[in-house]
Amino acid sequence: MAKDSIVILVIGDIVGKPGRNAIKAILPSIKDSYNIDYVIGNGENAAHGIGITKSITEELLENGIDVITSGNHIFKVKETFTFIKEFPGKLLRPANFPPGLPGDGISLREKDGVRYAVVNLHGRVFIKEDYDCPFRKADEILNEIKDKADIIIVDFHAEATSEKAALGRYLDGRVSAVVGTHTHVQTADEQLLKHGTAFITDIGMTGPHDSVIGMREQEIFERFTLQILNKFEVAKDDVKLQGILLYIDCREFKPVKLERISINLKS
Image (tube, rainbow, N blue to C red; front, side, top):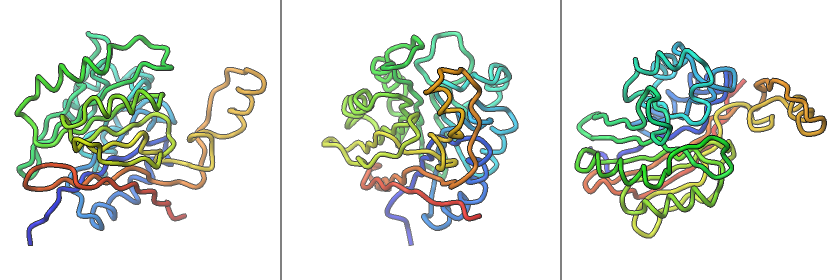
């Protein structure tokens, strides 16, 4: 019997080895249980909690992620500047990063006859780096990929709730979904906006939740109480895979449902 919906899983920020273990252990069963067609995962914190390496990129792709998105930490590991070119359309950096940086900000790929576009953008509010305007960059990209995609998913890696809400509504009716990443805290505002775009402020974190957004408590306490610029360490306990399931009508390619998921890694 033919499916009524295309099911897309978008996985929240994957943090360190605990997050990668969750992908390896949980993702195959989720794909089977929900009959998932396409998987997107934010991997900018996959290497020891900050950045990503070539071997980890290969690991995440081998474990079932189709496209890896990122954010402000994508180039924290220096080797990323060279190897990112080896994964065109599979490992993204934000499209509104300064011109001249290597890598793609857009993925255009076809799978089982469906054309998927994944757009990676970065916010500017409360962010110290000077990025191009994500709103204007989104307009530019949508003009470039017009008639080239059936489904368009935007990963908006941003700090401010207001900026995420604004971009979601700015793109309402022009993309399939705008999903927020970066804050590592899953929000309860998943919705279909008035012109049909699916939106959620933040899809959460895949990693250790007995933590301060993935990091061990002690170093965080010292940073806040003593202003010590110490190195953060990835926590270990209460590991979960978080994200959203996006259901798209097979005939008209319109979103019909957005569902949060949070699944514990069994010890």
